[in-house]
Length: 66
Picture 1 (tube, rainbow, N blue to C red):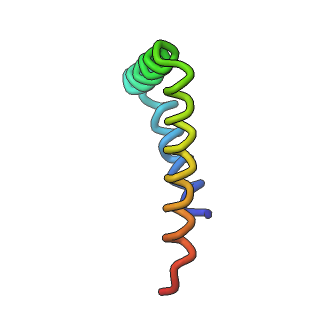
Picture 2: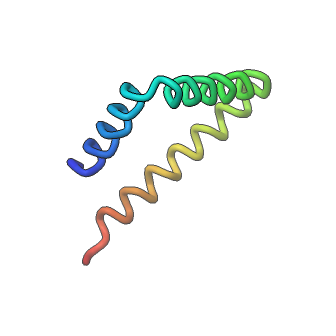
Picture 3: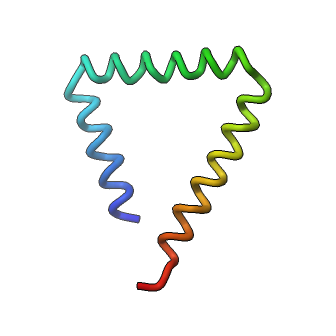
């Protein structure tokens, strides 16, 4: 869990340091939200299913014996 938080922390720190990358990231997120609102509500359903599936795969790999 510490590895996940440290990766997010480093990513956030890099976005704070680099204004150009921060602008590109927020523009990409905004474009994604705009596209999702065009195809709502189905895009939210698919997004939720993808989030659940990704979470299940992450927990499955983390709980696997080594």
